[in-house]
Length: 257
Image (cartoon, rainbow, N blue to C red; front, side, top):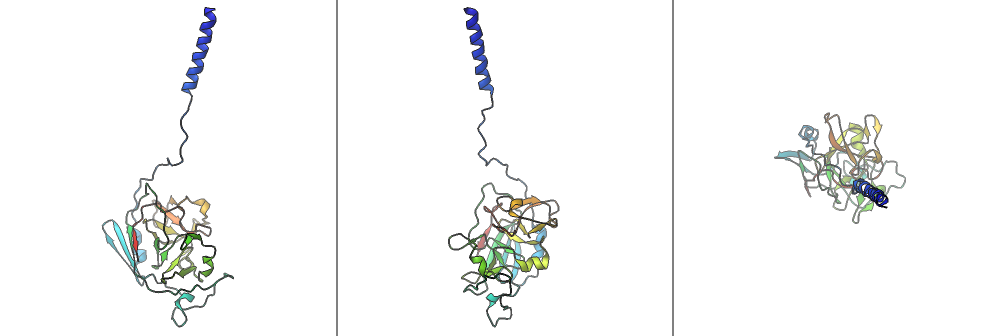
């Protein structure tokens, strides 16, 4: 009898030890990816904004301050008939419809980090300007105002260069600025978002980029012609969200108009 008790007790202890030693770690909550601690420097790319009419910039400590009148350097039906830059719509959208707004000069100021880095706490983009393109026209996000609607209907008012003005006359791009990609190339640097990270066109290394190739903020880390050692950068794509996804990858500066 005592022998049987010993055997039973030993077996019970073995079962308990096995259970206690098994891996019962809690699963990850999905937010444990380490933050990229690299700090980049965009000062070497600022010369691409030189000699742009209506656009100037200056460095103020660790911030680059852009001032722009926001006027596109290309023709559009939104200049209004009689304007030297007026051109009737000649794009390819069969559903195109002129919105009631006209292009007008702005006083747009963007204070953008000169040495951007990934933010620990990401911020959503807002309606209105979220960055600046090479010709001084602001970038907007993937939504139409006033209630963050998809661009499904608004896209029908984009002119032949895929921009349009809102009700205060601020011309802007939500999607690929085809005037810029036609002049600089589909893989070219096209501007900066407010967090200081660069925006590139819809091609990379000869391949078309889609949203599936990018992270949830619509970018990735990699080498570019301008940053051969690598940098986080956004891409404009033909599919939604076009330019930016779940918010800024870095910490945005201030934009006023």
